[in-house]
Length: 271
Ligand SMILES: [Fe+2]
Image (cartoon, rainbow, N blue to C red):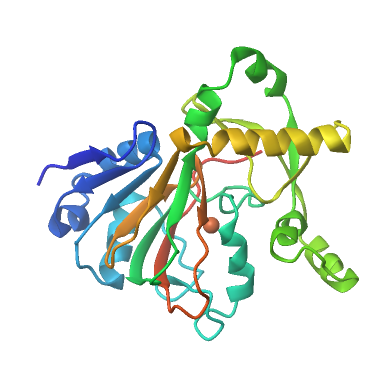
């Protein structure tokens, strides 16, 4: 069955209509990957698939990371009884991309809605290619060669602003990583690399560095670059992790909201 693509906004987010058989067969996989790279976020509605089918579909699109979760499925919940790392996941309420500290950040992630909160819990995505492209040329030149130190510690201040000495020392055990502010991809396209782990710009005074990172985040998350997904049970959504940032909107921690995630391994080094 051919794909029907419906763009949700001009710059980011598309619904794709097709059937489960087409997705499981992988016959449109190349096409889907191209749409994902261009649109940042794609989703399928009303497919009625199970965990095994989710993983099968993921494997038509890339290499899955099976070390996390059972059988390639990782349960996203803020309930400590469901996910032992629930408190860490509170960081997902702030703009970020996954794996900024890894040598190969995830290519993409598939998220399937199992249970929803009555209120909140939407996921927002911003297109960091489009945000870069829309910058004035003069600004592109100014930021082209800047490098940014990313740290797990920095992202924890969003969740826990008054960390104890022990907590600070704990998060500082994770090695920091220096990334370009502008990521030139193997395709030649460029995107902005920001997010909650972005700590400071190398060789800039601290005030200038913080102001620049905040200003570029504000820029990238303007409405014209953002798609907000209003979840329905059964939605299978895929986001490009190398060309977007994402965040969940707040929802009650006892709401039972549950997502099943499958990760596609990174294919492009971030140096
Ligand atoms: Fe995330």
